[in-house]
Length: 216
Image (cartoon, one colour):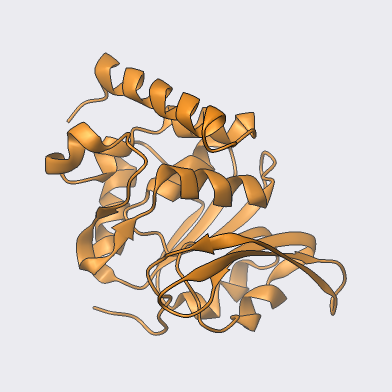
């Protein structure tokens, strides 16, 4: 598959939808989503629908999030250029690509081997370079590379993984869907001091569950 004028035109329509209908007003986030060819991260059967605001199945019984969810989560992080960002749940690599398009330094973990391998191959094909890509347990984060400016969890957690909060810089932000399997609340934590966190909630979403350990 290539990134054709038709695909670019559909992306422009998607950006207008995210801005006008979904209220996403972070122009850096919208510009990044406009750059990333979402259809290349999906099976070819979904190519014609890749720029609709829909989730699609990917490998390992996982899903790629709605573009509006990707935009919302990314906007909540308030990413600056060269922010050091830890992403929990690489998935097919689409969200990672959006973060890279925002010129963040991305460290990403995936626990499903099929998805880790798929995204690794996709990044090579598209000349995308995360700072570090790991197959491992997202609950543990990447303490070797901590602290991080931002942490993005792309899967729903029933309990707050406190180890990740420890890996945030003071002033840093973590965005995570919290709650039971049926529905999660998109939540942002801002680290005010080593022991103080501000917590904000941004509405109900449905994400695949966050699982510990790894799946070969």
